[in-house]
Length: 253
Image (cartoon, rainbow, N blue to C red):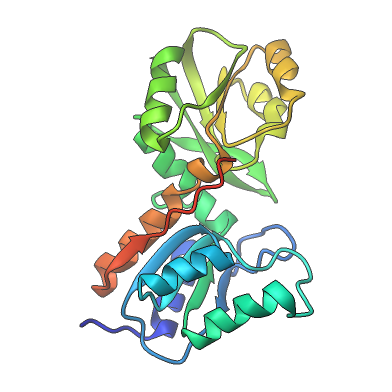
């Protein structure tokens, strides 16, 4: 059975994703969030770090859980009640947690946006959507009927996207920013896009998209962000010879 030191995997991920130099939301804490004291023999990947996914990791006999949405976003103390139960699960079962938020969104090969764009058949990707003074999304020129693009989205994510048909029936400039970028439709329109793909957005964006002449595809925050952790875990599996599994715990949002 292959074994790899946790610090070896963490160092590789930090270099690969440039976590030290990447700006992110306050509290995102990219990198190793929980360590353990034994070699890593099995990887698990999940979109979110939660008690539910930690239990799935334990059931899968994983030593390292790789997530997109980590444990820390705001002050999380005291460690009592459910938080204490989560801490006990991690420590008692020696499950380490590595989190990569915006660094994983933005990676040009393993990132959520690059992998979703590839699944949609988009080629010639270019940087798009600056956030925290860095590009995290991608865009491409294409000629795809809107109905065809919807079918590709459903095939890629496993669920029919919510659609705002505010733009042309044939999509020629398409931007992809997974997750919760729906409130930023003007960025897409100002950049000359006619179609914007993201995870979720507020109610008022329907009228805004119509005003902007923009097609919007909401594929679900969770569903659009399964791609990066799968790609990262698969990459680590190939590099270190470790088995991995994806822990599906969909939110429907």
